[in-house]
Amino acid sequence: MEINKNKELPNMLLSHVELYVKDLKEMTAFYTEKLGFVITDSGSGDNGMVFLSRSPNEHHQIVLSPYPSRSATDSPVDHISFRVDSLAHLKRFIESLLCSDEIPLQTVSHGSTWSIYFRDPEGNRFEIFTDTPWYVHQPCKFEVDFNLSDEALMASTLQVIRELPGFAMANDWQQSHQRQLKSND
Figure 1 (tube, rainbow, N blue to C red):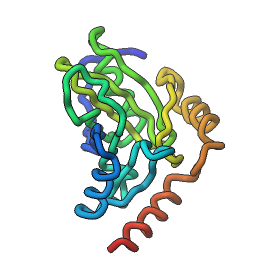
Figure 2: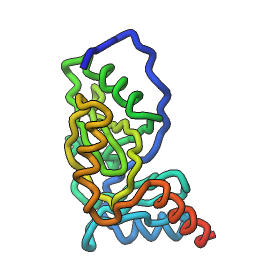
Figure 3: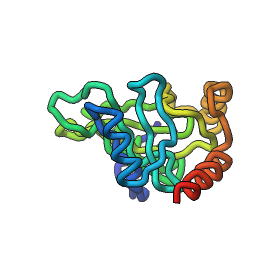
Figure 4: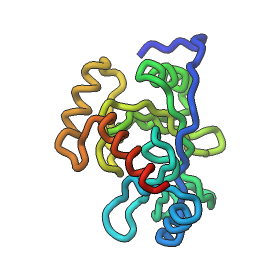
């Protein structure tokens, strides 16, 4: 990937926050009962991650993670996530971050998104992502190669997710999610 340090970076929007929690049931009850969030997905078992949203356009705005923090300092925040409009915009951020040898990138797909994870100079973890045209139940995460052409990346992602639970077109999932939110009003 050719790196161009002078390119203007595209806009990105804050998408979601993942929180480490000690009492998953209590935190889930608080966000659903007191703040009106809807559970959009959850991991398996009593200690699976819980994905919550109040937006018809966001699969999750808050993720409750019952796992121990991977951070060297105690913080309830796992990562802060920003959405960009397209795969081309995501690749522009990859180029920008690759200008520094000191910023290792984790490049993944969650089936429903393509994402990069990285840490700022003080160790705070960030994600920048763009949507895929698909939906799968979360959590889902696998490595991807952003050096592939857009067409090859789409094909390789689809090959991994098309047999996963909940696989659907993103538009179909969004319509179902909107109906779920309206039924909670």
